[in-house]
Length: 502
Image 1 (cartoon, rainbow, N blue to C red):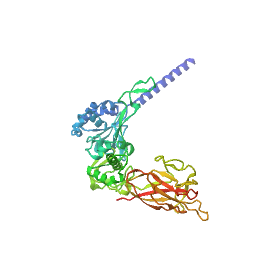
Image 2 (image 1 turned 180 degrees about the vertical axis):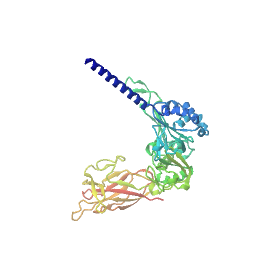
Image 3 (image 1 turned 120 degrees about the vertical axis):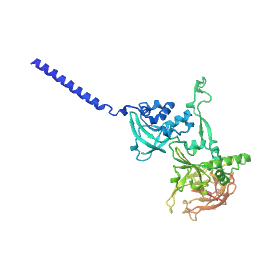
Image 4 (image 1 turned 60 degrees about the vertical axis):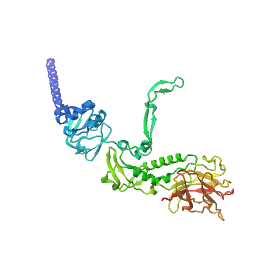
């Protein structure tokens, strides 16, 4: 009986071993790569294609042969030998340019034509963005698509795709111009100590000692303050004006940005005026969006919110760049009222008050007594919510509030909104007057005193005032020449200065 049981278990064990051994063999057969192409990597696929021998050589010269032979996944758009026959020899003979060129045809990850239901923007290994569709890679046609390999996909194209310059690169490589010179003058050197080489430690302070000349890089005020048109992921329409067009803009705008600093020399004032005018021109030449001539809208918006019209008849040259389009133009069109805008001085945004002296004219001090408040109100006619400043109970004659708006050199029509909706029930009502003054001291009159009417929500015209220099303007709201509370109050929603444009 025991012998039978032993025989049974031996037989059962042998059956189980044979069963799972057979299953394992079948599973391994199932997992074997059936398509021998998938056993190759992208490099072997290219090397084995005689029509791609030139591109294979470029891969070897630039070191990208080792990159695409790795275990990472790539997509390659390889131009044929015929396509590369007319490649600019300046690229072929320059190691850096050739590396940029080859990298322009390689991207990380797998991209199949069936995935390109719409235009795909793909980042290549050189940092440029490329447009990929079911049939095209940028301007090149895809002649053979979706060839699988063990580490990615190969497409074959009928022309080389040379890396495009981005907007900033195009400007710096363009012909000399007034606009280019000014924008390049906005470069400055910047030191980032995190990138500087440490050569020792100061024994007294314990601070690191940095090697001279390390950690420096170049930055540009225009790219920082207006728009970084070197950003490959941006979409820009950029205008480069011809020198005649640039000078025409300067002639049109410089009178509004004339600087007449009495403490500076005429040469210095002329230089500052010229620099400011140049900046005012270029800051509105970067337009939001990538608009070719075929889809150029009637109105474009600059990054400083100026509405501009680009007349196609004024376009001298058109250049497609990697992050948009560049137009060389002999004219741009916009309304001057969009460029030279009204100035709004909000009552609550004052520089100094009866609590102390003017920071710009410390010798002129106001009293320290009284109550100062910012009140929120609702216009019953428009339902608009507004805030205004209210000063009262100061016992000071010709009390003042100081403002410091930035204005153009121009003549302005000046208005205020000063809503008195307090102390309206006294009999008879107590009225008070106030005025607006400009200059070095609030004691010099600009406009006569004007009574603040009860429950008047409208703009009140005060008069015209001519500004002779672009920049900060001292503006004052001045109370009545009385020390009696109630007669020397101040209230203001806003002062509006509307430029008279020629």
